[in-house]
Length: 247
View 1 (spheres, one colour):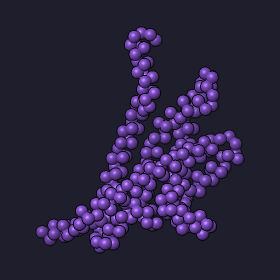
View 2 (cartoon, rainbow, N blue to C red; view 1 turned 180 degrees about the vertical axis):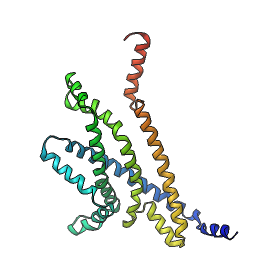
View 3 (cartoon, one colour; view 1 turned 90 degrees about the vertical axis):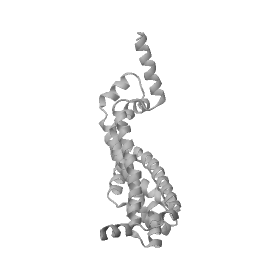
View 4 (cartoon, one colour; view 1 turned 30 degrees about the vertical axis):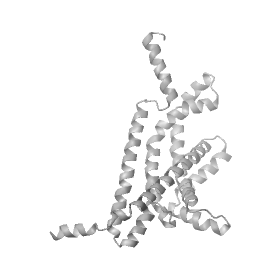
């Protein structure tokens, strides 16, 4: 009975008063995640292509960037972006500094994933495309990139879920995301254990379904399920021709 009462004593925060705060924090967390992932994907792909370039002058800066940000803590990047840049006259809003920090950090890891995926496409695929008269641009977009996406999906999915969790570090600059709201609630209620248990559960409720959906998407792509509407139409047309004996 004593154990039960001690357990029930943990959960005494009036959560109805803080639903709005959590909702705001959750939306901010998702905003940071989406904006940062888009930026990190674009920058990471550019870095990967630079790493694969034949010119040393192009490869070396990309390699230096990747190794630099892979070996610097994300928290240090956040502090440099938000607290350090103002000393040289560059002042960023909290959202801008948070997104920039996450983009710089995760672009380094995504560039390695993309580089390995692109390099993993057999050279014969490109040679066959060029033999058919396709230019370098069409060869990359129609032949190399679709195959590289399949190879890059597992690592990219992991980075996306990790990015969601890493937004919690933005609490250090009061970014108003989920962990910041948790800190404010804990300071008002003095119920840190309960608050952080609930917030941890919220993170799990976000990350687990996302990771499972991404895993399902990965399986569908590996099974050859077309994602674009144009490719679906082409496959449907091809099946129709085969059924009619026109091929």
